[in-house]
Each structure stands twice: as structure tokens, then as C-alpha cells.
Length: 98
Image (cartoon, rainbow, N blue to C red; front, side, top):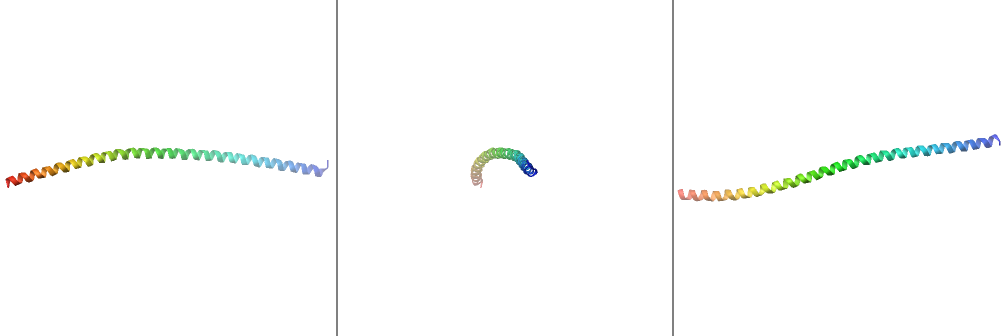
């Protein structure tokens, strides 16, 4: 074989090795990016679960507050009715005395 043919074969092999190295690096970067994306997705899902639990807790608290508000509204209505009756009795007593 001549020197020129050997040079072409060596150059072709060098290009092949360089291309395989590039592909390996590309795959390694892809794996690294995949790991990074997976980590970010996991953190995001964890955050969303935490927020979801917080929203659920707020809903429970809101229902409890609505119940308390309803109970207070009922008590206020009864107190108003009682006060109205007391005023009538006071007016009747004042009418009898006056």
C-alpha cells in the first residue's frame, strides 16, 4: 500500500473515532439533561402536592368557618327576637305605670 492510501485510511478512521466520541458525548449530555429534567419534574410535583394539601386544608377550614358563621347568625336572630319581645314587655310595663 502506498503512503497516500494509508493516510486516507488513517484520516477516515480518525474521523470515525471523532464522530463516535461526539455521539457518546451527546448521549452523555442527553442523559445528564434527562436526569436534571427528572429531578426538576420531581421537585415540581412535590411542590404541587404540597400546594394541593394546603388548598384542601383551607377548604376544610372554610367549611368549619361557614358552619360557625351559620350558628352565630342563628343565635343573633334568636337574640334579636328575644330583645324585640323584651322591648314589648318593657313598653307594656311602662304603659301600666304611666
